[in-house]
Length: 169
Image (cartoon, rainbow, N blue to C red; front, side, top):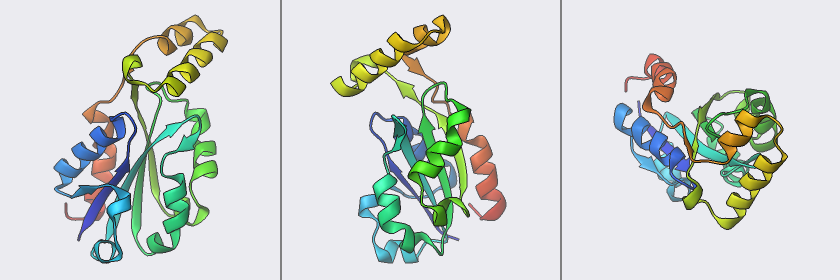
């Protein structure tokens, strides 16, 4: 059985998870824009990782454009959100960003991400500052106002177990 790890990352959290997954399962890790029909045909399954920014999945357009190419593949999606993800928003993120033909059959997991304030774009930095300003909970306000890194290898353990139970990796 063959698989690939595809990912789109802005600040490196999703790439870190993709690299850990690829190394652990001994699978190639590539940018989805480099995937061609020959590579896809050789795969039994795909792990697809993307970050979420303001509710938008970085691979939303790619998933919509390529959903017909993915229909016959087993898909595992790992979605990287804020360091303290709001599980109540997960379902809406799926509905707003992933074509139905994909989410009804894919295994989807949410993983906590990171933000390092000095590395953020001006737009992302301002968005985070605005969220902090509007937050009433002092603990959440404080968390939004400082570096926060929840990217840890142990977060992928359940995903790796699921894949190993289905495929010889």
